[in-house]
Image (cartoon, rainbow, N blue to C red; front, side, top):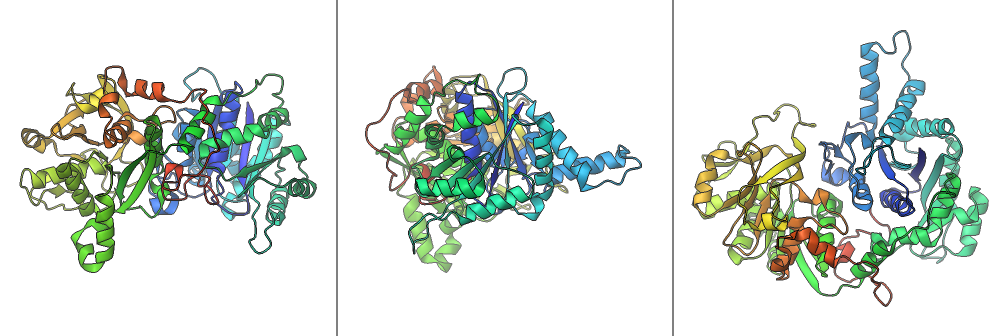
Length: 600
């Protein structure tokens, strides 16, 4: 097994996750099998109880693991299925060691950070790296490890020590360290400054880790004299210093690394030069060029409570982008704070209220993503009502599906106090109820999590057609509440259709409004399985419906076949890539290598 460690210095948010993913893509294109591990030094056992404002979205894996959003990047870029153990946290390591101590495995020993914690980290890495994640038998050839945080963070110290020991444990030729650092340009002098990277590398070396490669983030390509200076003061060969400058979207990064011969340098460090082939990235390149040159817009409103931080909905944004590119449309996302749609805001902040409704009424489609807590729920209900009454394409995910059911009960069944027991426990008409198997006392890892089967009960529904008329689908879940089974019959008689249910037939998975051009809610999270070149069928349906092309994707050969036929293969767009002014990967937020540092 070969290991590539990606660390970061100077500042956080440099894009270690995208860099690690892109290195994985490059190595995979060389014919190697690749797996990934993310190390998060926080004390939480997992990301499940964190606020999206604190750490971005919580990404959910097939096995129910609630993990860092970077694992979503790994899965999307490498088209693999990771496990919860691919996300290592301080909490998990200490929990593991303390459990062994209580069991008596260290009997007679004083349990310490070195060697017990550091040994546990190394053993965890070796064990997880050997787990197949690409559907093939046997371990991968290369494991890409990303160390979260910034070199010098106090919480990273045990991991730095463990990785330093690990590099000697696996031996030279089996370990490559890529350090991602910042080379800023000061407007006052207008030159690229190397001192932050010099200090970062000095700190890294002082902790026992010696970088083999420098990946330097900058607004534009490094000047040759700057690279020479870095090589001299950081003791890294000139040909091992790469520039990761700002590009229109992150799909350009694998090609950017290839153009600088990163695959040759990494394969040389890992003694793989004799077995790797020349990487083929035509599909990635053409898709990136296509994305950067789309001009016909499709405007989608994302109505949520975390709209001030795009990372909170990262997988949703990526799924929308995948679908928009498949339909040859330029994605424009309008962020609509759900609370700004509510009557309370009309009184307290009329300008915000008017702005929110103006945005909502100017879009081609509406998406209400998942969330927790009652803030903004009434705004989401109003958004669902507007989409239903105005015949605007609508997709509700998790809570988004639940608010669509509540709105239908209020408006069509005239149950004006219909609500969820999550927000109004005393409601006389509980449309959404707490699942009986859930825990009311413990929050972490107690939801209905991971890949679950949804069986189509309405064969001619739009969702069934989008999924290629399959009998069932496996999608990932993350919820504590569900549609009240006692209200299903009444809702169906009023015109709502529950197109898919779980294996018991009692838990509602997909809801549709047959009389509407496109009004679908899913209890699961389809965004987690969307990939570049393999868009999620429900997102593809939303985008297609929003630009009047739904019929073209609803056919027996499945929505995936539509995507394959539209996916760029060896098709290069003439002209230079230019950043779109109103969308694409940046979707009105700084998401991607645009206007400075790219997000994780």
